[in-house]
Amino acid sequence: MKSGPSRLYHHFTSRNQIPSCSLLLLLAGLLICGCAVNPVTGKNELSLVSEASEIRIGDKQYLPTQQSQGGLYSVDAGLSQYVNEVGQRLAQASDRQLPYEFVVLNDGVANAWALPGGKIAVNRGLLLRLSSEAELAAVLAHEIVHAAARHGAKTIERGTLLQGALMAASMSLDKSQDRYGNMIMGSAQLGAQLISQRYSRSAELEADHFGIVYMARAGYDPNAAVSLQETFVVLSQSQKQTWLEGLFASHPPSQERVNRNRQTVSELQKTIRGDFEVGADRYQKKLSYLASKSEAYLAFDKARQAVHQGDLAAADQQIRTAIRQEPREPRFFGLQGEIAYENKQYLRAMAHYKTALKIDPNYYEYYLGKGLVLFKLDRKQAAISDLKKSNQLLPNAVATHALGEISLEQGNKQAAKEYFRAVMKGSGAQAETAKLQFVKLDITANPQAYIAIQTLVRDQEIILKVTNSTPLEIKQMSIVINIESQGKSRQKTVSLNYLKGHQGKLLKTGIRPEPSIPTAIGTRIKAIHPSS
Image (cartoon, rainbow, N blue to C red; front, side, top):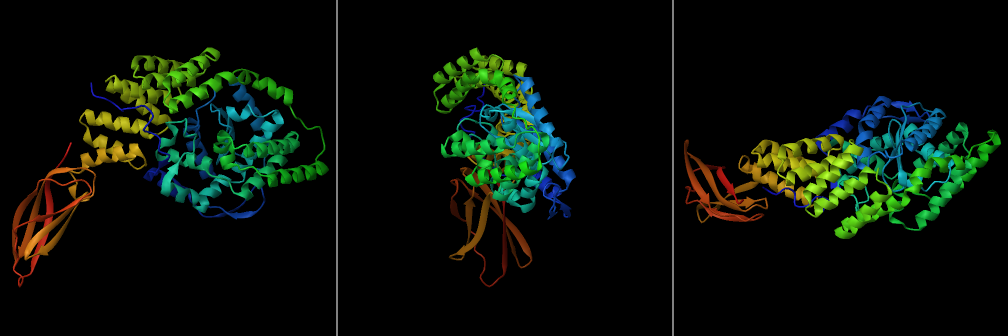
């Protein structure tokens, strides 16, 4: 049985991924010049991305972006329904009617985000740090404004997103613990870039101001926005990594925002009267189940960290604790599958991934893990099915690279080349591996793309300077030399027996042209044999 990927996670840690043509074409196709009145601010603005395009972006990016952030939190369906109800209540009070959606993601990092078109998500980790429904309303209203005021669309219009994608499209996840999600590929990178962009100062102040207005319109106590921002300022000073990599990375808190919020609330209270809701008791009741499982998720986080540190025994102990406390959480079984895989216990890993999929059949990571296990068990056809399903849910380099290796083993070199080509557009160890695999397959058909030949004349003899731009060692190469002189053509084949990677060599040809007679020299590589 041939070996599959040497390790399930450890060499898939690159953050950067150069976008595919599909991403660039998607962006280019969305740029439609025009002017429009911003429905939130009332300002007349240049609008390059139409409303229809905003909605299309949100629809297309919402599901893969959820996948990259832990998937949906499904254990307590009532909590997700509650968050959506609060969000829809606020959406009705907004200045722009969009097809708003609100979901809870299964991620312990305190974060919330909005995509163009009104697609909004909040992590379970942030919900546990709020104390009332009014504070939840403050978070959701803030994100509603980001969507309604076109902040994400403006990012695209300014070109900063496209420029960043061209340099290195990335997903800013907790890279110390997440080993898959930062390998997003294709057009799904757009959502990743949008939610990881740091909002400008003006965008944050705008979202704060109108978010408070929407809260008051919907009947929520706007003072919750002030107290929440005060809490965020204190937390940002604690330098806790999860906060710095979550909400604060894209929504930096500041004392200025606290002061502005106070001013906005003070002005609103002069014009809007009524009994505003805080909803502390209702919120705590809705959060009670998730809060009761805090220790289980803490054990889960410790297990992930232990895996990252290579302490699989500690990881196994922690994840068993988590499962005892919450046996309905599929991510616990997914991590248990990873631990078993790392311990080369493939049948056990398979059982854990199947359990995770039975609970939640809609998360890419379980299909990915199961597919890699099947690869190790030499069940290639079954592996292909799961790896492709993983890519359908979230196009990712790990599944794509494995599909390339399977195609290569099955003798389908063209398919393998296409898979490797997609992966090598990234950076890091895996991209370099894929690049080497691609070059090995492509160099025999397209040697001129990798081997440069320069014609020189030294001591009245034609000399070829042959340069290898690849890391591959070339065992043997045949070069055909075309000589044209006085209307006549002739050919000579010379051989080069060894050429190191990234090196050049001078090759004598034995051809001595007459200095007084014009002679044209052309070369082509007839055959090339790289080392295996």
